[in-house]
Image (cartoon, rainbow, N blue to C red):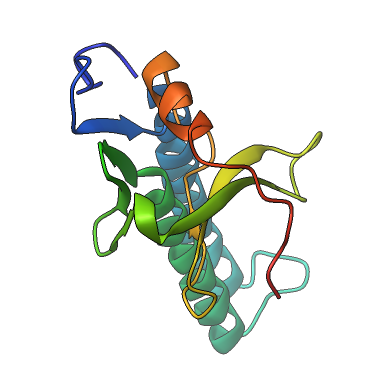
Length: 160
């Protein structure tokens, strides 16, 4: 994320996004997947493949790939906004905010599918009935963000 994208100028609110390189990679990979399956579908229908799939199987695969691409694109477009008294994670069709008095603590989540495991912040609400607030993976942060998050106590419990 370039300085012009970072809206934190030592005051609040401060907005953070997934870094630009990661966003471009995810969107580009999504375009590649959609294009690849758009090319493969007619080849299967024309019988050019050694083991052609049925129309139903192709439709199921195409819908699954499209759903994955949309899901991944929406995930990398989420943004985190820090307020003096809270934090908000928002995206295209999603927004959730917790005030500091609603936060029990923070912990780190780990991506199991990534080599070495990518880490991301999880904000744990004090109300056990509410879901944890997961910050985006590959979030571009600065020292202001790290100072804000460090004020939240670390917890080691994981909810079921």
